[in-house]
Structures are given as C-alpha cells and as structure tokens.
Length: 127
Image 1 (cartoon, rainbow, N blue to C red):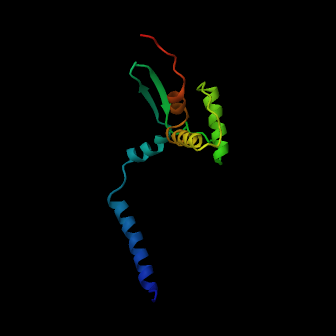
Image 2: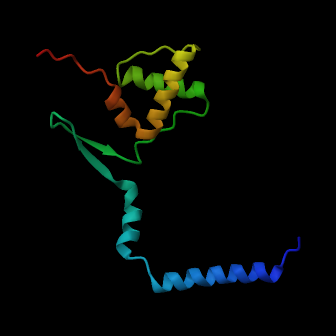
Image 3: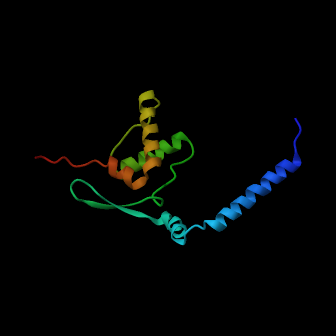
C-alpha cells in the first residue's frame, strides 16, 4: 500500500482551514467562555428533607487518598475514624476488600464533604 503524501498534506490543510472558517463564521459567545472559566469555583447549597442547608464545593473538595489500594484504605480509614466516628477493620477477606473498594470509588466520585456527610454516624432520634 502506497502512502500518498499530497493527499495527507491536502486533507490536513483542508481540515485546518475548515476549523478557522467555522470559528470565524460562528464565534463562541464571551459568556460561555467566562462560564467555563468560572465553573471551577462553583459552590452548591443543598437542602435536605429537614430543611437543613449545607454548602458543597464541586472541585476543591477532591483529596488524594494515595496511589496503592493499601494507602487508599488506610487514608480512608483515618477519615472514617476521625470525621465520621466509624471504625471499619482492614483485613484481607474478600467481603471486606470489596467494601473498601466500594468506599474508595464512592469517595473519588462524590468528594470529601459529601462522603463525610453520607457516612457520619447520625444520633438516634426517638419519636
């Protein structure tokens, strides 16, 4: 199979010119550009069923747990023990390891403050 150099160069130049022409004809509004830049600093106010309001920040709330599974489990165990007042053992049984992997994925998906809020021991309320 032969490589046609003029075809490769011609298609690259055409794609570049098409991009330039499209951005000239349809410029992106300034509000969208500013909104994308400000998106990093968005804070949300969440209201639960008891009308308690709390602030949640989307991007600043991500913390590194570590690189290996063992480091992540130990870091998360400290967070659960200190901030959530829960104590989970780290042993190498299949059931416990699966539980820790679920917790790690949840922590990485929703962030620190949401994870702490979801797993904090809530005091028992009698009716």
